[in-house]
Amino acid sequence: MKNVLLLQGPVGPFFKLLAQYLKSKSDVKVFQITFNGGDERFCHKGISTPYRGDPKDWSQYISKFITANEINDIIVFGDCRFYHRVAKKAADIANVTFWAFEEGYLRPTFITLEKDGVNGNSNFEQLDLESFSPEREEVKQELTLSSTFLAMSLHAIQYYFFKMLYRKKYRKYIHHRPWLNIEEAFSWARSGIRKIKYKHGEASLEKYLTEDLAGQFFLAPLQVSVDSQILYHSPYRSVEEFIGVVIRSFAENANEKDFLVFKHHPMDRGFNNYARYIKKLSYAYDVSGRILYCHDLNLPNLLQKTKGTITINSTVGISSLHHNTPTKVLGKAIYNIDGVTSQKPLDEFWLSPCVPCPQKFHTFREFLRDKNQIPGSFYRKPELTLHAVADKMFI
Image (cartoon, rainbow, N blue to C red; front, side):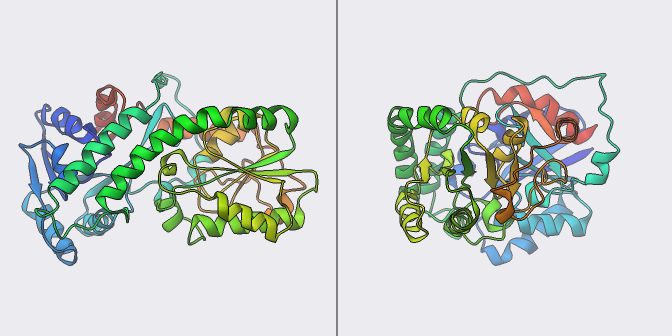
């Protein structure tokens, strides 16, 4: 008998569906702990237990819960959230398997599921990659899904509404995002408006970049401001610090005819805008006119025309490599591999960006597909992934 504990999942019904699917198996018993009204809204009511205690007592609580219910596996979405970091420590002590979901490394048609942690906490080893030989008996098929933005936004609005509605019940809860409930709701609504605005307003900019400046600009995709990729897996304290480092290096080392383009993260669209900050730094480093800032341009089009990509550890880096584009990583990323990404200092990258080795990247991509990528989405037709998730965990 497997006893499985679910903690926080992605916004929406994915963990509820997963719980129902696992419960349908005769050898699996499922538990879930909720931490706020949003979790409660999307949980499986028959198996859930609310945690309403003080954060400082969570470590003792989860350790006792694991022991009392003989938990074998813990499943979370986002391994760097406070409650999940503490649960991981408790799981290690109790010799319990810890599974972490995250958005797919190979987006948009995959989700990630790894044992022990994801991104900077991944147990990915390059030695495994070097000896990896893909099995061809069963090829993972990529699912064709429409955009997940609308579905995710609607789930997020519900999640934060119920989080606010039950705030007194879970008054000691600490959230992994710093904004108030009303700020979250407002920002998601603003994100939708901005998406429509930028789609039409940036059409001429995309044409300018992909035609007039083709092969003459570098692309720097930005992270979400409060993402664990910034907070835990990068040398930078903020997105602003990353922007400053890149602009300074570009100004001092790049060819005077080249341009630098910062692309805003779509999930941060309604929360932040760096236009003024970038403008100030551009003037300060005397590169005004050569630094551009965009939001919703077509990413594949940009990656096909860019001279090189500079990223902290975004999965855009994998997309960049897929387009055979020179890529420089400034943080901790599983794809920062010699022969795949540039190992030169950033100051040297501007004048000598090297293309990735196609064979090494192909092997890396096949390794990911085999080891930790599951075809599907958390937000569009999530039920299509449940069988593959169970197979990954229990077979």
